[in-house]
Image 1 (cartoon, one colour):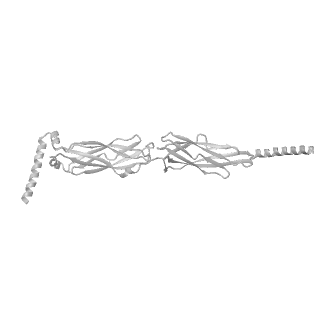
Image 2: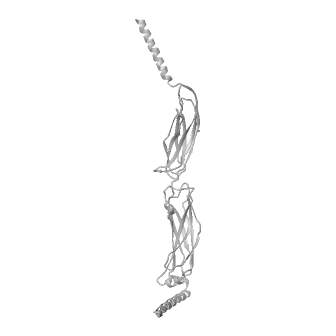
Image 3: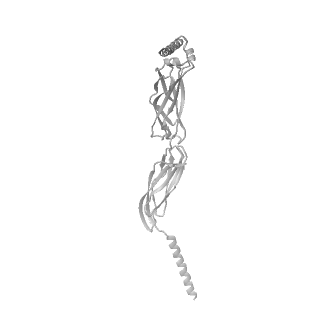
Length: 316
């Protein structure tokens, strides 16, 4: 039995020596075609992209997994065994991203050890950030080029890999006041404040508006909601209408009314942004004569009735 084992080992060693001599004698190209040794790469990233990436503010760090193996022809195994344990250099670089995305690789040069008939995996980090104008829940991508350098008779390998992710919704608005946030009016008048709202988010947005606080005896109503189309520059105008108290007499009132504005995704109200507040100052100055027309009418009617009564008395 021992003799048989020794014979098998001798045959293997002899085969390796013959293969090595053949590789040394033949030109590199011819030897490569005969043994057909070829690096093969695959690039994936982890589960970090299952959650949408929030525009601006968030720097998402992803793990890139680069797997390597060497394919061979029918008579290439013996030659591949000679390269076992050798190092193959791998380069990883970003070649394309959307205009609203930036990405960087922490370590772009790696190395793997040749392991016949096995897959070897090495890792690096990729940092990803998206801008405010990234399309909410649209498809984002990063194109990565991976290259395995030539190592002896093991041919080089180069391929682009497209890795996808999803940008999150970024609810962001910019309110402004085309006129002012304070007015002086008479107690019988009405103060109207236009509120211009611009969409700085990355999807069609509805802005919900409410009057948060209003003084006693004052009345205030506001446009309940406005819709902003997707994209910066989309605007809509809401209106706040305020009526001061108009009790009879002279008024010298000054009060503040507070409103709130909250952006939500137009087709999914569960996606909400931060609430923005704005205050408006109204001064009510002057005399108020509520019901004056009715009093005048009643007085005129009384005079008419009195005249009619006097005429009837004279006829008698």
